[in-house]
Length: 361
Ligand code: BGC
Image (cartoon, rainbow, N blue to C red):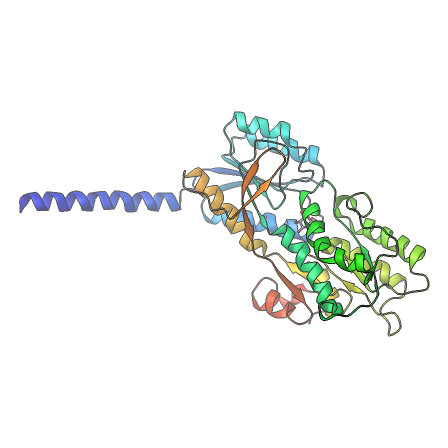
């Protein structure tokens, strides 16, 4: 009996150690410093990403050094160098030019600091440990499929419909994946003559990239396309990979007189569900936008960082090849918003308040 009691109290003592140990593990962020670098404040999404990651890390007891780089990779590299010097325990990086971080990440490696690429893949270096993102190829595919369904091409509609294609920044690996996903769906219809790209410009990045994802760049290119190719005929479809480009495209369409019965807005895609663009969807100026819930991405990247710091298995469900290695990755789920579901998806879910969206109330 005495022996049994000793065994029992030993077991209880061990359990207590395990329980307290776990308790410490969940609040284990205490004292640890996480370096977070985001590309720019000029786009709504990165402000939200930065704020969400910071808030979620701080709630777990981490300290956070959050930096924005004004879309300049050299600036971001010196911010990362500073974070290494400050002794950050993990680096979470949303890069600008994903192929230009090799040098600074060598320093991170020398200091044994794990690196997680955030949303955008960091390429051409061994020294990136994990990647947390959304299904980037899936974004383009969903945009392509939206166009196909909106025009009824899947039901045999033959058009022909006029279309122009836009691509993102050539330094951003995602831009290639968005383009690939969309073109894999649309190219067969272009080959068949059902979709007609009057400019003939479909090659990414050579012909359709927009530097730094700038609205102004998209507006200028759309102005040129409308003048050169659509003086006598309306444009029916514009493939835009994201919302900053879609803002410029809408501005151009409006100044060319689109938005009337004889000149209706073309089908126009987007991504990010920026507040301005949700307003554009409500007013019928933009057809859809891919919704990437940055709260989910923030939670996932933090789960990954914690697992790394605690030596536990890191959650992954995909790999991305960065030119040098297969980076273990997590793809978060995407959805799309259009005129039918934007309220349910974006407001009822608590992502936005109705008053956040211009023109919604
Ligand atoms: C992101 C998009 C964003 C774009 C421009 C991409 O890497 O995945 O969500 O619209 O950058 O900032």
